[in-house]
Every structure is written in C-alpha cells, then in structure tokens.
Length: 469
Image (cartoon, rainbow, N blue to C red; front, top):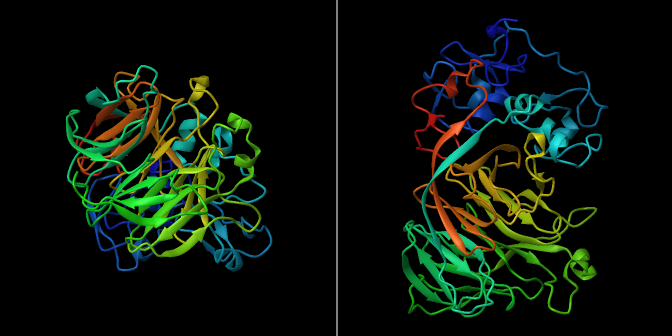
C-alpha cells in the first residue's frame, strides 16, 4: 500500500479522512491527537510538509473529506453497546457510537468487554496509534531527555534521625518553586540553582502548596483539616483559614479554569495506632474532592460514583484548564484518575512498564503536575523516569535524565514558569532541576517528517526547540 493510502500519523487505513489546504489527508482523530485538540481559529502546522493551515470556524470537521483514499470499514453496530446502529464517530477517540451512547460517551472510559485494567498490554488499545505500534514492536514513542541544571540538598533541621524527604514542590508564578520538606517549620522558596529566596513560617504541619492566579498562597494542613491562606507569601503576611474540611484531611490542591479551588484528601488518615498498610478503615474509607470558590464557599463535592467510590486515598492533584480535567493521584488504588469538573471519570492510568521488564510492575503515583500545554507528568518513586499523560490519562511517553538516575526515588514534581522540571526525592532530601534537551524516538527512519525537521517542538513543552538524538 502506498504512503498516500494511509494516514501519516497513525500509519493505518484512514478513518474519516480530512484534507488540509496543502492537500495532505489525515484521520480527524489523529489531527486532534497530534495537535492537542486545537479547534479555534489558529494556524496549525501540517505534520507532513510543515505548511501553516488555517482552521475553519467549526474546527477540523469543516475541512473537506477525502473520498479518494481507502478508508477503514465502518461497523454497522455501536462499538460501546454493540446493539444500536451507528450514529457518529467520536472525533477525539475514533469510537463508533450510536445516538444513545453519544450522550454518555467518555473518551477515557472502557466498555465492560474491555475490562478495567489499563496496565501493560491492557492499556495498548487506548494509546495513540503510533505508540501502539511502538509497544507492539517493544519500542517507545517518546523518551524526553533532560539536562540537569542543578541538584541541591534541602535545608533540613539539624536532627540526626530525621527522615529527609521532599513532601511536595509547587511552581511560583514569579519564578522558582516552593518546596515543602519533611519535619520543617518553614516553607522554602528556591530559585532554580538551589538558592533560598524566601522562608515562610508555617502555622502547622503541611502537605502541599498552591500559588493562585491572584498571588495568594494556599497551604493544606492535613492534621488540622484545613487549608490556610498565607496572603501574598511574604514572611510577615498574616495567615487565615481559607476553608476548613471537617470530613477529610486535605492534601492535594489545584486551581481550575474558573479560578475555583479543588482540594482532595482521604477521610481517614493513619496514625501510630494503625498497623501500617493493614488499616481496614483506611482501605474502606472513600476519598473526597471538594471544589470551592475563591471565597471558600463549597460548590461541589466529588465523592462517589454510582456503584463505588471514585477515590480511596487521593493525594496530589493537577488540572488541565484546556480540557477542564483534573488528574488525581490515588496512592491506595495505585492509579491516576482523570475526572472532569463535574466529577465524571474521563480516564485513568495504572502504570506502564518498559519492555524486557526493565521496571517493576508496581505503580505508585506519588505526585502529578501539569505542563504549560495541559499534559500531565506523574512521578513514581519506584521508577527512574516520569510518565507523560495526555489530558485524558493516555500514556504517551516518559521523561528521563541524561545521567540516568536523576529522577530516581521521585516523590514530588512540578514544571516552573521557564518549563524547567523540578523533582524532589523521597529519601535523599535532594531537589533536582532539569531542562528538556532532546528526545529519542524509534520512528526516525520510518517516514515521520514531523520528527525529523530542524524546528522541532514537543507538544507538552511548548516553545522548546529540540534536536532529536
């Protein structure tokens, strides 16, 4: 089959082929996948010839359909219910659905026939087509390599038996990042070279930090069951309760597109009386996610699904304001759950291991953050890399340090205003700051021109010009 008869993005028969002004055709779902869901009046770059193309008013659907190329045969029955006749093709995930299923369709949700396992081979069907091909051939789609800018030890209290771990890292809009260290009475703000530029005395033991769009600093105090506002973050600023959460212990926080604040946490927090991981109350108590206005008024509680709780032990969370989705790390369910602002589950990620059992099969998401373009980075202390997920939880690659071990034992992660990646380490008490430098891709010799050009940009780090290695 000639190159013109297959989509150059998924390298498969066309599914609803759309022709760009440059005369190159692609599956409409591949256009959304490759271009990050672009639907407004913006210029896009053709993945083949790199020619700018103007998007019509109604998005990709307004591009002319190419009827002169072979297309994949459309099923007669809905791919979700397997009963009713086909009504449309989902432009985001290419699922063929009936009119009834269209109202309930979720891009990350699998049918009962597929099962709910999203690990290893079970996740291949939900991956982008080009990554699916790579996994079948034991290759990876994208391995983003980073240069180390700095590595420094956190300022811990001078106590011999203290556990030196980095609890959380949060980006500052004015540069640098806030670092929460274990057993430290201060919240520390560092620049990217490891210099402390601010020390903020804490009201009580804290978990995570959030600097809002208006410059306020919110800190979750899980033991107090409260989120405290520290004004503008200056050492002499007064603190006050932003919101009290008597029904759960707040840990994760993120600011949404409408400037509401989402706060998550477990309803039961283990103490010294609990027997480590054998605490039955911790296993059965559902987690909670609340959404508050900027004035601290509760507007929504996301607690349970129709049949079972969505969360068990939610910790850190991050939001994608472009798709209005929230990624939630659940350390008991060992997965990242993607929900929308209404609380509907849109997808989940239960880990992925490299071929030849290079990594262990266990997945323990410890931290999640979003990039400037809305992708999610997930840290796992048992891996020497970060997972890259799309806004609906699909795995699209990994981030690794050029020296091989700079991302080991990672417990916290954030991307700062300069697109540098900050990683805190679980037991070493160190913070590593990395800058994306290049990427490796196994498709370089298989006619993928958008990976071979001189002007290369990764969608999850916009503005970066990288050279393939």
